[in-house]
Amino acid sequence: MVAVINTGPSVRSIFNYNENKIKAGKAELIGDGNYPAAASKLHKDSRLKLLLKPLELNANVKRGSVHISLNFDSSENNMQKEKLMEIAHAYMSKIGFASQPYLVYQHHDAGHPHIHIVSVKVKSDGKRIDMQNIGRNQSETARKEIEKAFNLVPAQGRQKEKILNIKPAKSSVLEYGAAETKKAIAAVLNAVIPNYKYTTVGELNAVLNLYNVTALQGSKDSRMFLHKGLAYQILNDKKQPVGIPLKASSFYMKPTLAYLEIKFAANRTGRNPHLKRIKNAVDLAFMQNRIKTVSDFDRILIQDGIKTAERRNEQGILYGLTYIDHKTKCVFNGSTLGKPYSASGIEERCGIKSFRASSASVKILEDDALKNKQSQSSFISAGELQKIIDSVLQPEFSDDFIPSELKRKKKRKKGKGQSDY
Image 1 (cartoon, rainbow, N blue to C red):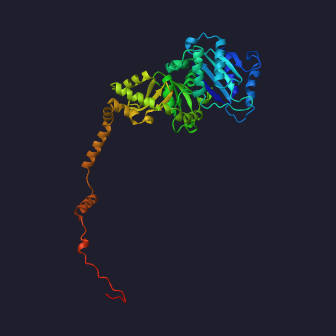
Image 2: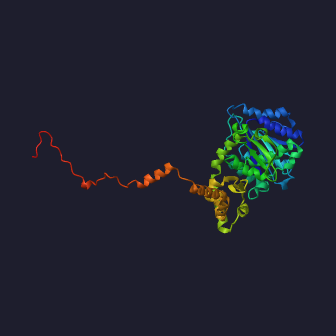
Image 3: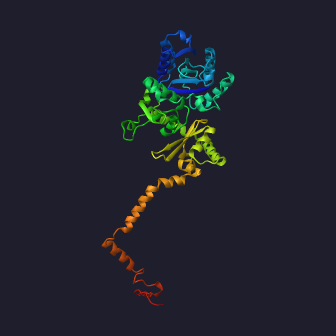
């Protein structure tokens, strides 16, 4: 089981998101928590008002809505609603939401079984529930306990792609229109953005590109870049953008640049404990194997759950390397780990850096040789020639130089009224 927790400023929007899924025949309301009557028997407006009521008690809470998705393995597709509700109640209790009002929806629009839980983080007495590090602490503990109690397929130790059921977005979805394109991108964003620890848009893209999605900031002089805009687009099999970019603000999660920058700051410290794991894996790979290419290096690391993302220029020259650790969900640029782990450092350790550098520098060396040849065959002007002659004929020591030992000592003048005695 994998739990994904998101908070937001509007409980109304996440409520309508799930209710609209019911209208489209892609979801159903299967239960609730702490409602005075069965939520399915209540009118839609009444269900929403019971969620809004606690938020009115504390106007200082700006992001009061809580949206949780519990994702199960595809082999667990036949779970009964009663069991799903038991899991939902157990999970909410273990993360500190036992007394909160919440609604549980079962969605049927993905290849794996999953439920969505809508709640709020303001208690009935107006106090706010602290959700700092809830995903890493309470949620992770709850996940492990629930997996054992309900005999679920454990998330830990399996490949990340299978755990989160991340399916690469295919350019073929463009044939079905904007709705299908948005759905394909959203599936990848929902699985990657809340779970991985990255500190730049480039590091985030290293993960998104694995699943044929990219985040676009625009060129540095573009309107989008200057206004800190962000868009997401599908990539084809050659990792080239296709179709129309979709604004970040158009997605339910609102993965805008402002939202990501908050995550960047938190991730900088959150990923530090896992930095040594990648370094050790790299060092061990070179100690135990004869690695001659970067592709061999990637093939060895992936066995330990670490994927490398290469950045090459138009000539195919490697200039950047990013490490994606699917086990710890941390992303590191190679230069952040140190020179031995950067793109140039890895090529040196593979024994291909010097060859690559010389082949890339042929033109530069030829240009330098041509310049030297031109300078050697050029004429010297009369003024420059005279300066050279003057510097050659200039004596090393000045004529008037006299050693201190040969200088005559000056007699000390007697002052008026002074004598030798």
